[in-house]
Length: 227
Figure 1 (cartoon, rainbow, N blue to C red):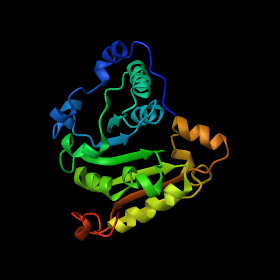
Figure 2: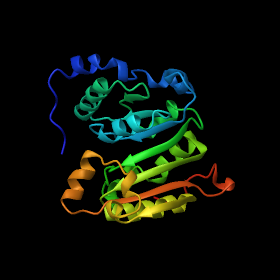
Figure 3: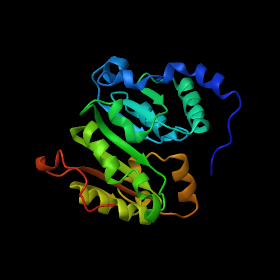
Figure 4: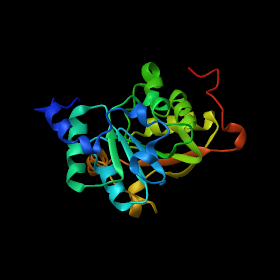
């Protein structure tokens, strides 16, 4: 379901300029200079209303966080919250995740968070899934050698499909949880708005981390037989 268009959206976004990046392509290779330090960069793709990324930025002041959200209604809510928090290690932008190579240099990102991404029907729109090989190509380009992906979802079918997709790509899937909120990882978990809603409805939350397996996979591209 799409959000209703927020009133005075342009004016409200302009008021949040301090936490927004209007020309992200100009920051390619210069993100640490933007933050004024050499701390690692963590990226959340699809930050929604910002609950997760705001809490992460507050807990980890030694990390620079970049949050991407294309839905302007959600983006304005996240940025307005960030303005009240006054976090120097957090910036927001609206951008297409498929083109992240245009705004991040090779190896510039240390971790990518994919929280409750759209599952997209597998038989018709699977290439739009953020764990499809097309997107893994992009992550492979911008992640540092020891960088990783952290993926959470309530959708079991998407989770199983994502494990297969990531393994076929040649990356190692690790720290798998089939019921995050009843696992050893629960204490350190930060919930998103969707996560809280789904878990209250009785849905399990699935989580994994993924990283390159061996050096020979560093420049691997999607297998030719994949759709």
